Image (cartoon, rainbow over all chains, first blue to last red; front, side, top):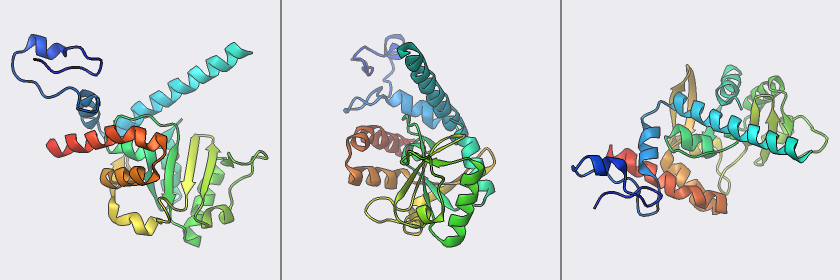
Length: 69
Length: 157
């Protein structure tokens, strides 16, 4: 049986490739593919991704503030 | 939030600090979200003077004070946490972490990595996990599975 994604579905790579894949999630439901992706970035690239998340969250907050007015 | 630029100001002022908290987790490779930069600063008078100069350039104000007080040396020489807003984002400068762990105490559990040409001293993932375990708050416990899994993936690679 193929590895399960964090949402319980079979990861696409398992359907396409019969070779045993690395686990996609661990026993605690952590998405290991996301961790491998992050570890493949440089520290600067990781911080740039984080800055993007922070900016997005701020824009959402501003939109909610504007909508509440 | 301009994390790298915020770090650049601190480095330019030669502030001695360790990146801790969520940003340390990200530098270590953990895919987690956070909304502030937490640093553990060295509490020598000279370093606190340099930190205050950096905070002045950053237009820092204390988030805990409704009068928007600017942080001064007395705020930063003690073991407490200065929670601040700056023109480049939210910055928390901590005098201690855990029960009473200082910058000097934690140095052995840090590493220096170059980020955009800046030497940035950061808490190791192993120590960060220990800090989060000891803090025991819901937000710390919630992130532990990702931190442990990141450590596991790093060991496996």
